[in-house]
Image (cartoon, rainbow, N blue to C red; front, side, top):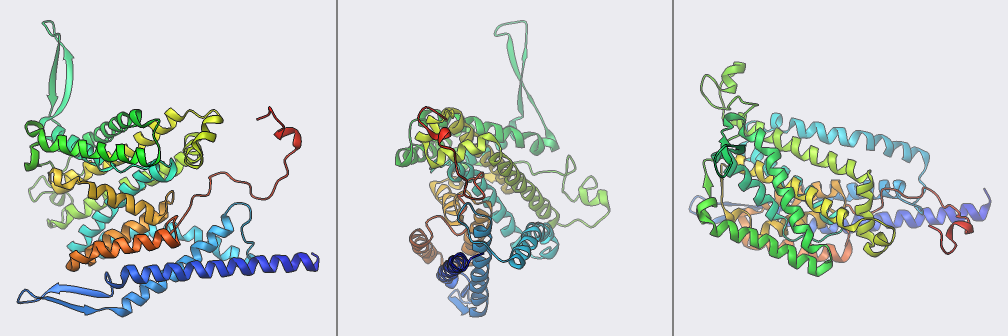
Length: 461
């Protein structure tokens, strides 16, 4: 290699290192602002009802340091695996990152599987972990619509509500089963009582019904984009909520629906009786068994959502979503069916929301319209934007930070939305693509390639 080429390569590497350090410093400052009140200050109600607080600067420094180091690792991996123009790393660093990349996902998965074992006696943390995983699943579902297809959806909570109410109503009334009769009107409907199998039978039904409503929403917004699409989806979410609120004969109105059946271990109830799961395996009954079971259910649903999304991104439909996100006009000019692409994105995203809604209903045992307000849509959308639209890892980290952080910050409820708004503004200024931005296309050139002039002349391609 000649001296000028070596000098140019060294200068490019130095600029890349400076950019990585700059991004890491910005991420650490954002983490300091975000977590200063969430983790740095702990509040509780005192014995006489007053608010008491104490500082935890050591934990705050550890979190900020972890964000700084994590940002360096993520940025380096992105530049290493990115498209044309990425920074060439030394072989030792490449091998080290390759090993870390192979170990990171199994390590996170093993930790997630061991959470109920580690925190078995801490019910609050188990409940919080289930809540975080629910929002991770919602974030991944909305990521299909917003992050991959580029369709701004402000009414995602509507599909969450459709899934929850579909499960609650069908579990209590039974699954409709039409059959033919000899007399007018020649068709009658019987309701199949699913008993202890209600959750497992109605979980896919709830997802399919939510997907159906996703397609219904997709048709009127086929020609809309940007702000107009956001307004229509926002209206759709409010319409669903108002219908639930006012259709009292069916949904119970503001009183909601109670007594929703709990999930069973494939027909075996998690109860104290002799027919319960604890008696069957010969261990003392504990209410924590149900929490552990719920945790593994939502973990499995979230992993299924992630796996399906990753697989779809590698299929033609996933690449059509990315093409539509980057430039809808160019996508249409290339012959991609925009109608099918948009409807599939809405349907699949809504289906995952329906799954999460069914799980929410069976976990709570009670649902009401207050659980499906616009604030929920805004929260899920904020998770996607904060984590990085299109990034599965970023959405998961944002859900952990926002849902877990909000719970830690619950004592100062009147200030947390103020802090959240300020952080979002700073994030849009310094990192408009999220904490872990990953909008690189699935397919890209690994190195500069010259294209023959005969392939780009007018009338070709």
